[in-house]
Image (cartoon, rainbow, N blue to C red; front, side):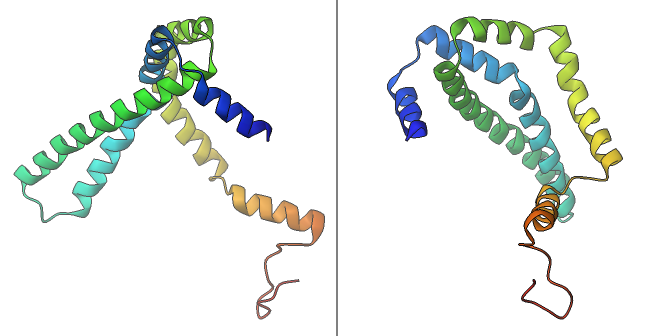
Length: 155
């Protein structure tokens, strides 16, 4: 009930133009705004690699189309995320966040994130949250444990 009330309150409160603009500025300069182009570039390259039958001209067209689709997706994401930020955060908080997002330190941080994340995941050997959760729950309750070989019904 509380969540429904919060959702209704957020939907009813139309943010000011200033708040919308700040929210979009945060979305554009934040982590998702920085990562989406990198992710879509990687996916475009994967598509190109998966289709060796494409000519050089077709590969170039696919890359150009990827940029167009990315720009469209980024515009939609920026608007939606900006509106959400404007509904949730105060103008003062968004001004501070935008100032940080546009700082040299934030730029360095965003550039370091993919490298640091990849390094951490490599050193951990990956994460299997679902597997770890299942094992921990099994240990506590005896439920959801993996079935022993030859016994599909489990414990």
